Length: 302
Ligand code: PSU
Ligand code: MN
Image (cartoon, rainbow, N blue to C red):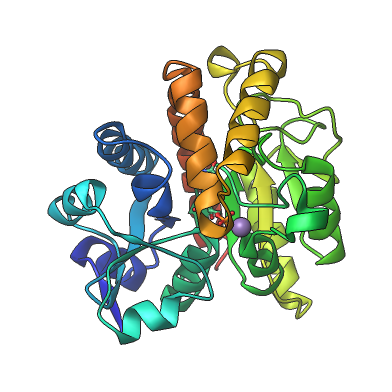
């Protein structure tokens, strides 16, 4: 059922380190052409760090693990690409559609493909006002059931971070800050909330994933990797912008799957593109850590 790119097929056959990558960040998370440029740079970063990148997407009803550069380019420019979470994946595959995979759907595909680690920017979470809207990303429940270590820069301040951490705790998901005590907040290194767990070494992150499997526990881990200092945007700068974007989303009646892409696009516009620069820096940083974890996972196999 899976279409592996030749590079990824060979890496998996040789038990070489592989890092999965999502495609919603390309189609719904960043504008063209920065999305394509970033996707290519992330793949290059992973190769430079000694691992093989496997970007995941559904192309005309086929589940691709590893895209050619041509496929990446087509996807980055395509319109009407579905945003596929756990709920949508089977329909898209059964009906020949093209769609980008979210964190949840990418985890499902990575797990099927035998890939243990996945790097991205930010995960979905509990949206502000969720007590009325019930808008809680399926990413959180996926982390509780699918055995993939997800490297992200925490969660965006467009989300309710305390509630997001509470749901992750309830679901039994290890939330591990990398190299610091604070839970990072995507564009800034410190959300003001403590992370439940902290590890400073990719080898220990890999060992924890293996231990979870030995214990018979389902699910993955969330590794929260802070944005590099030089790329950080302070939360005081962003707070009013996020509030404005949120108010516009509410006024326009944006709901469901459209909420996250709408907010990201408005924040990009309201920061004159600065939010995107930070986003790119943190994704590259997560790709490097993902590659280090992938190398450790392979090493600990024997
Ligand atoms: N957060 C970001 N950038 C993104 C996303 C989230 O900072 O591109 C995407 C990811 O694919 C994530 C999805 O899995 O949005 C979550 O969407 P929702 O809230 O609809 O589950
Ligand atoms: Mn949602």
